[in-house]
Length: 487
View (tube, rainbow, N blue to C red):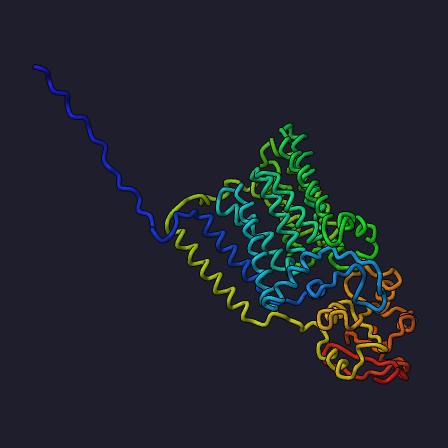
């Protein structure tokens, strides 16, 4: 009789790992990403105080009112002078948010942009693989951003730059660069840096001996997006604006952000350590990307050393390089998945919403650095409008534009590249208390001066028999020319 086959061993049945029905099975890196978003929410909800932003908002209000400025509408020292409103789209966004919800709407716009930027930066650290490596990498731009991002249109430019780098790092369809570059051209003048980045990628990849077909395609699509950027209310002048700006470098260096960093501020010192780490760890870069990474580090570090405004740009561009150098640092992988991580992300997201609500409940504007009471004093006495002319610091000019739009004409604001050279020279003379300060005030028929009490011009005006101190507070002095036309 046939012998029965022995029974085969049955493999033990392993129960599937229970999964939460409420929370997705997210990674450990998602938890840290949520914390990054929480931090960015705190940065974005800060009160609005930047002087340049005030003029951008005012311009947005003018555009919504049906007037698109092609010449200066704000000053009596450059009336009708040609003005390229390079960040018109950012101004329009500010104006729309302001019309919909006032300062709260603007801060919500800034917060959403800040969070989007921070999450892009976190995603760019994926090359580090571990939690420690990714945290060390993202901490540099976040610390710098907590000080330098602010509410200016630069914030939009940084977001577009981060998206561009992300498209290239993740090998996304380069056709996305067409709308991205159009938006960038019409929002902020830093768009050439994105094109330079793409060219450097192609050059570095070729030196590394790699196939750079994708990089060349990206350069072409980005170039198309830039050219299409000239289709706007401003026109093709937008494309030439960065070149015109560089031609006025002698004026721009008068602004702190265009000057070489002195590395006295903590965020500049952190960036310096960032650069040192990049250089020291370059041998850890895979050989197939070593020249590409070296070229990026060299060019963008050099740019940051020439102007402190480029520090924040370099901190974004060089994130993937540092992430690659720190690959494998630490033992905690960022890709580990557990249901509890989904729960943690949900809790942090709720905390972010709470922080957003609490932040937006605070006053939207912080105007303590401006002569608010002194300007009100002049307004009550009718000394802000014709025939009177007021000389004030450039930041006060921005504040006057914010408060009165184009109804009160200012001496200067921080658009120094727009003003005639003689006006800029005169403004610098007043700032330093130079020997020709009286000639400057006479030349522009100034009869009222609002000035910082701690600057030299205030002391000179106190001593002059031709001027009288008529109002003062803790920080600001108001002087009136003796014999001026009364209000």
